[in-house]
Length: 119
Image 1: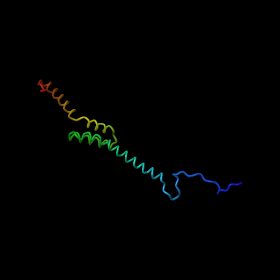
Image 2: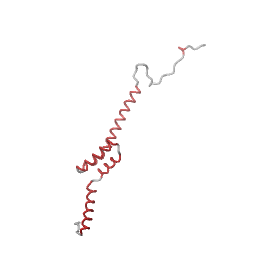
Image 3: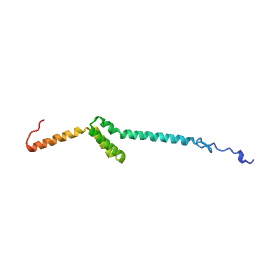
Image 4: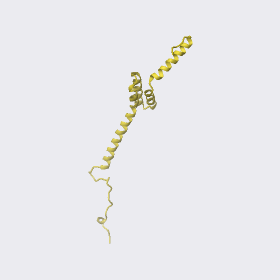
């Protein structure tokens, strides 16, 4: 018995193969998931990027401006060292850095002149 071409059953087609003129459901689903993932990573990136500004919000105006400039430069230049510097500057108030340096320089100046510094 000879098999005719019309008697042969074709293999079933997978669900993601569409017919001519039909919309590709898998393509649309992957495109939507890709857009959502990109938006999620973008929001996460900008949230992390704004972390030094949020930390320095309670500090003085000069410190907030320096931290903001460093954060903006790190965003545009893709330089992580500037972001780390902004984060460290936001975490440590400038007064903790400047006051001991001023006291030390005053003590050194008064030691040279022979006068005594008030404690």
